[in-house]
Image 1 (spheres, rainbow, N blue to C red):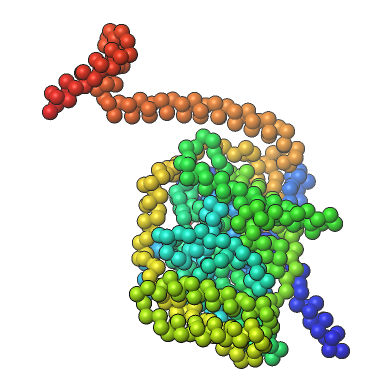
Image 2: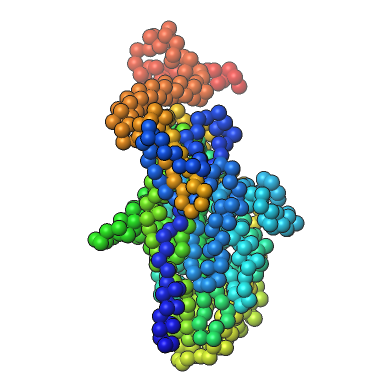
Length: 587
Ligand SMILES: Nc1ncnc2c1ncn2[C@@H]1O[C@H](COP(=O)(O)OP(=O)(O)OP(=O)(O)O)[C@@H](O)[C@H]1O
């Protein structure tokens, strides 16, 4: 009877869930006003036989007018589930400038308010307001702390993947140290030496979020004044600190990811080397993400299983659990509504459609308090904390910490030898927490600079690498007569995105004509632009030459002088003699 009950419970806890996919369409930006939009949302499905429509199905579609709070309300179930031990991932995907950072973090608060303590309080108050511009991450933080049951602890970490290297965003950004990925039974795939901060309230957690956000690498591009050049994962770890009646501990992880935007490499656009490398890495990791999703969705349909290339990028390796493992995942695909972005919009919607076919087996993360794996983890954590403390020790009175550390090591030795009571395991967990809190205080004393540092990163990139200016490129979209229609059925359960074309033909019918036309157009455009570019470069070169050495330039370009020179050497010597004379005269 008991066994039967256990079995039913297990079945209830193990759930096979599809990845939830929603679409968010951002409004036209100021600089885009007047441009043609290709996205339309409709409440009723269009069944006009003239339009042969391509349909995409998603869980929800949020139109241009949707509020930040609506996006959050659609996925706040992850909070309750996190306290039940279920992992969750919320991931913003989309082309550059489509609104991922806006969705995850919110609008740029720093320009609206200084992030000083008093303003922070205002911001936190503001979070309760449905019209606040705060994004998903601050709302999840707020929701977690407001709904936290007793005996739970929350830890927070923040990382970025930049050019295929992982960096801790909560460490001193002046000394960036790439971190390595590892895998363990207890934590799955994790980043070694990533700082985990013990957070006691949402104020502290928001402060950490803001710090990390400031350390993120951004760049001004043609599409976005503040384009994120790295993928970021803001991680919240939720743990019970008390063993329940069955000697069980719960632990879950929330990954809140803001991906760097996919961006087409425009051959006609002048890119700095650093920008080019970034673009290559961003696009490569997003391609791998696409491949992972493609194969996972194929595997859901077919018996023959395809290999999943998680290891081909740091992003997919880190998100392995969220995509094919034990995590409830919600993907928000951001799209821009204007015609200029149609190709990227089609490709984002295709990605979203494939993601919709992926299902994941999820179950709560429970651990037996005296499980050897947990004990090993605690031992490992202590080693890590010890090394951190050693680093921070210089100049600081660490006697207390050192003493505690020794005591914990002794206790771990005992754990290794024999089983401990639940009380003893709880005590260790609490000690561990205390150490993390003390470390946090030390970190704060030494690592973080003032808030203006974020600006210095932007400025540094401006001056060092020569930004591409914020001008629109002359690239035209390939399919310029396409239109998307997005319909929201009244029950809000399923939403369809349909692609149709203004002249009534669908994409397949159009394909032949549109490829031919677009190729011709593109070729013509390319020829024109490369000629223009060549002329511009020539002009620029001549201008530089003139500026550098005005006298030489005028001398050499003057036909009367030029023809009188017999040889190159003679040319040079005359040129330098004249220069010398002019210099002396000037002096
Ligand atoms: N829903 C929205 N409402 C109002 N403004 C928005 C919205 N979404 C995005 N924006 C604005 O659009 C611009 C680009 O957005 P954002 O920086 O979030 O794009 P992104 O997808 O993160 O780009 P990248 O990948 O280049 O970092 C910003 O100025 C942002 O404030």
